[in-house]
Amino acid sequence: MMTPTVLRGRAWVWPDDVNTDIIIPFRFKARTNDPYEMAKYCMYGFDPEFYKKVKQGDLFVAGRNFGGGSSREQAPVAIKYSGVSAVVAESFARIFYRNAFAIGLPALEVPGISKEVKQFDELEVNLQDWSAKRVKDGRIFHALKVTDFLRGLMQEGGLVEYYKHHKSFPWERLKAATTTS
Amino acid sequence: MHQAILSDDSLTFAEKIISLRANGGEKIHRPGDITVLTADIAMAQDSTGPLAIRVFREMGVEKVWDPSRVHLVIDHTYPASDEQVANLHNLMREFVKQHGCRIVEGSISHQHLMESHIVPGMVLFGADSHTCQGGALGAFATGIGSSEMAALWATGNLWVRVPESVKVNLSGEFKRGVYARDIISHFIGMVGEDGGNYLSLEWKGPSVKNLSMASRACISNNSMECGCKLSVFEVDGLTEEYLGSVNRKPMFKVHAGKKANYKDEHDIELGKLEPQVAEPGNVDKVKSVREVEGTPIDQSFIGSSTNGRYEDLVIAAKVLKGRKVKAGTRCIVTPASRNVFEQAIKEGLAELFLEAGAVFTNATCGACVGTHLGVLGENEVCISSSPRNYMGRMGATSAKIYLASPAVCAASAVEGRIADPRKYL
Image (cartoon, rainbow over all chains, first blue to last red; front, side):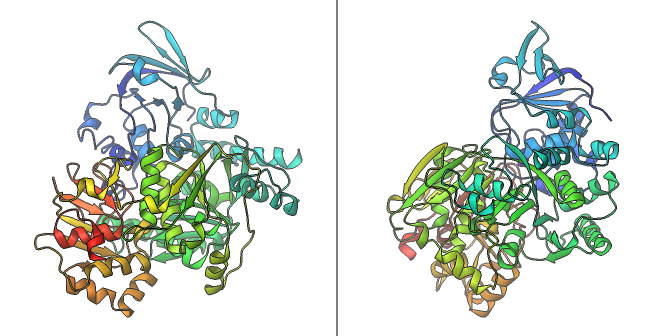
């Protein structure tokens, strides 16, 4: 499924260094292969009841180093399947960031964003412009640019959707391009 | 072109190995470039593999690209602690049967791959963050997630962004009771838990030659805790000796150029290091053991892929020999691989641990990830040689985890509180 270009919702604001053990503890994620089951443990470290409070279309805003630690893709999967449509953070840990694109969870890097958004502020993320807008005053925060093939991958909804559609992965075109140059 | 890249004076280790291995080594790659690497090894374990299998099937891919390069390792909850885990293990076994790829059970992936497969110059992707341990042997080794692993299984190729590099110069000699773990703990304390994000760490300087392969593995493994992509040691005499002993040969011996550009440079004087302890919650809250000694503990855990090698068990045994684990404190010793486990039995370490009152387990990631064999209950306090002390990592959200070397963990087990190991060595 293509990811919608504009994502509007209320923002949950999280601090710096939210690691993947907080997002979904190992003992829960290693006992299921079902994304909806994973979603029940989303943000368990901060609030075991989070999955009951989150609403479809909510957004995450976070500080530095969101998703640090383990390579567990169950972390972005739990966030996505809990109903959260995008994460806007000051910075992301490396593997979480890759995983977010791979599963089609929009992840935008906006330095300073966690000071500009308050809990449950309305936010609008635009995947065309790669930006976030604070709805109450229309202020736009531009995210750090990412390479075209990653944005394309995000718009197509992640690797599974991309592969089903193209029967190849986006970096294979990149490989072909660099080989001939 | 390979020779030209290998002898290029301007390239860091990361720039050199990526240039060599991308598209047959046709082009020099600089930081920020995005290119594609073909994997020599594509590994997933039992907490990332089942999801990778699910994704692989959802993609509709019929065959893995090269079964001999696909490694599945059952290590995180081994043997299965409950029915749900057992079913996921069986999903992995069934996949291996269907595709003819490799499987190993009961050794931690990073240690297993190091013992049996990794050579310098290799490209290794693992669906496990601590895959960067392979950098100890001069390989490109990094962690990814399950969907990218599924894509690798389909085609063997994955995109990489060439990282900037940071050089860490090690000089001087360790004082008694100080080990490789203290170097990397100190470094993480210095740069912070995202201080290495997206970067390649190169360990250099006159003291590197004195670091054993186990010590290098500990440093490369635990470098993940500052977010790095690679953490590497160049091939030297010790690497060659190690490879000779296991009868393997390098693919490429990659050495950074003398005029290479580094984003940053750090110096660590080993003689100034004290035993280090990271306080609960964040891996970068690092202090000297003197500042936290006396803190009561419920459990001491000695093991994990960071510090569960034979050398680590020997250090723990030195402290525990002829002593007893304090009544009311649990001490759990978990080797990193089946080989380490067997060696510990043959050399009498296992017996020594049991005599001291410790629990000696099979190789597993169990306690480190809070899945079995040492899970913490509410408000319990643990000192651990494993890599992470995050909230809820080893069990209850309210449990507190201190991180330290096997020596500090063993001394703390004896006293039932955080203790300086130097008086026992």
